[in-house]
Image (tube, rainbow, N blue to C red):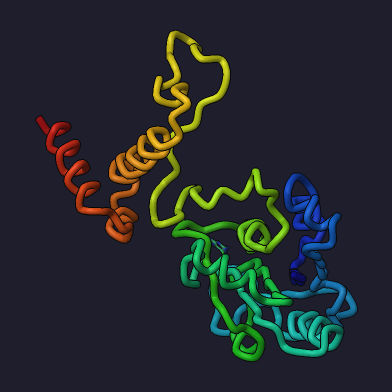
Length: 246
Ligand code: 6GU
């Protein structure tokens, strides 16, 4: 899968994605991450890419021309118009299902804004998806673009090893992951739950499923509403929750 990131800070994005699992995926050629400096496309003799907003108000607006020409350079190179995501707090909130869906694309353009935004006319021309990573405001789209590349890349076949790929991880089936323990068996006076040392895989699996359900009820009750629980599990959860209230 090929990411094309349009940004005023290409080094920030490239540096943030050249390490660990995504760096390894890029080295293997499973993903390519191409950072394009929007400033390289300005026709302004002072390399300016922003100007005052018509109608007045605070801040500066990124101008249409350099953004459009940077985008067009990608389209001409790859020979088609791929999905183009604008990272903005005005977008829909990014989610795991969307990461899986976008991982099926061959190319994806991510457009990072700065200042008070980008001239609406170029957005109308090139953007297919408006995406936010949460309800808070960041200074630019670079960190959100890096978040998206990470979440999408790990859904590309081959990027995660078998060891890393747990299908039972957080958010699978709308449940959070169960607690994990490693050596030593006792740390700081706290013992690893005995069932995990029992060697009984069926019991371990049942315990982990129960822990996932209880943890989700406690930390993310909004998610639990979307999870598929058996009647037995619903009964268990109801019992635990009334026990807590007492
Ligand atoms: Cl995508 N951009 C900015 N500037 N702030 C954000 C965001 C995006 N998502 C959450 N906050």
